[in-house]
Image 1 (spheres, rainbow, N blue to C red):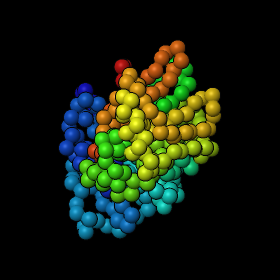
Image 2: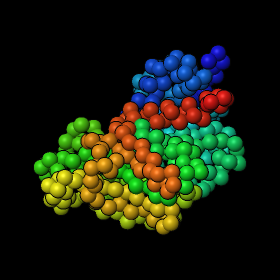
Image 3: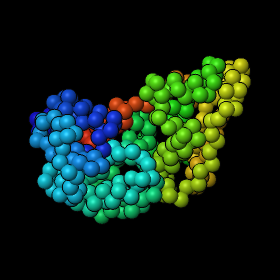
Length: 335
């Protein structure tokens, strides 16, 4: 493309996902510009107590060289930011701050790209209304399955196809653990191996309880059907010590045990997570290790399936890159 615009980005959060996002943009800036007509540039990085402002192409300095954290509004103004990227942990402790920062950015016409889930569950309607009122966009791919583009399908790819059901294994950790149980590992050993491989968090409670899978399907249902995630009820079955016997029993009959999160348009505001035996031919049966999949049931159009997208900080970071390009790249012709 002949005309390349620059998109200034303020990055909030500099853990593994934030570092991978900034590193990928720095390493692939030229390629992104050639392919998509936009060059996203990180102009500021903000953490809990400090921040750094950057010139285009300048690497992120060591943390001791950062300045004290200033007001977000000032940072957005000084950088001329077009996008606020949120890569802060999805924990109750940061929910209010994440919501406040996203709302502030949207009110200034700055697009928001987020991998943070907590404030999406509680402030969905307010975020959407604020974005519409100020001609801004919100993209949440990083919160609905990392590199798996399920959010894009739910948001626009299924329009007019009559999507009636969502059936998903959107959490790579629990799928990996269930497969290790089927291989004969005790649950503690399966968890430790998932952590050693970087698949599971230090605290895998949200993964094994079904909470993370339910959250992702709540968000997909919100995109597909306009549900308010705050009003969705969740019924979840956890993976516990009895899971090993169930996984082995399923395997003995040629099946695989999966933690399946589901929602139906005709059962509004309910997401269920259940341990189910899947059979060959089922896209959820075919998952390998920490892969994820979502099956959108579309009545006359048939099932639409997206799968793959292994769990990793880089996968989540690439989802943030994709969404940043989506809200800033030129929209002409086929694009």
